[in-house]
Amino acid sequence: MKTLLLILVALLALAGGIYMQRGLTTPPVAASELDSVFPDLEGKPHSLTEWKGKVVILNFWATWCSPCLEEIPEFIKLQNELGSKGLQFIGLLTDDEADAGKDFIKAKPINYPVLDGTIGGRQLTQKLGDSAGVLPISAVFDPDGKLVHVEIGIFTREEVLEKIKPWIK
Image (cartoon, helix red, strand yellow):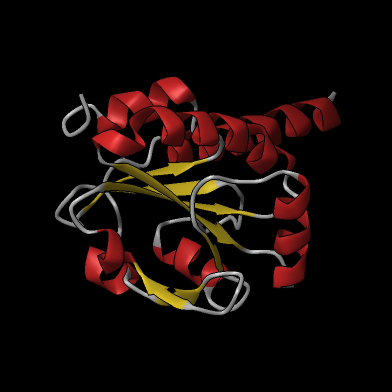
């Protein structure tokens, strides 16, 4: 009976922690701290300031992360639908090697930029409040480059549309 009670308490604590992380609405870091430079998968360096003037969703993902792979098709659709209205998805690959991302994209093309976050990508998620080291995580920046939302876990179509509503009609 004690063991069952301990397991139940542990599960409730875990669920509470996940809920609190998913509900993170106040970014714990200034947007300027997040403006790191990452190369694309061909080696060309990029900074988030390149996309200033657009609503940017920076999505941290890995090829081995099934929730990450679950949300990518919806991000592709949203990029197609709303890219011309100012929405820009950017994938930041956090695999151990960029070649995994190159192979993935050859098999399943992605219609938005994918940057190589194999060095520094996971540290950036920690700055965003991902203390548990989970993926996926997405950061939403307004057209001025201000960090306005962090989503830890799957970012659904409905949640994306709700968060970008002030800027994308």
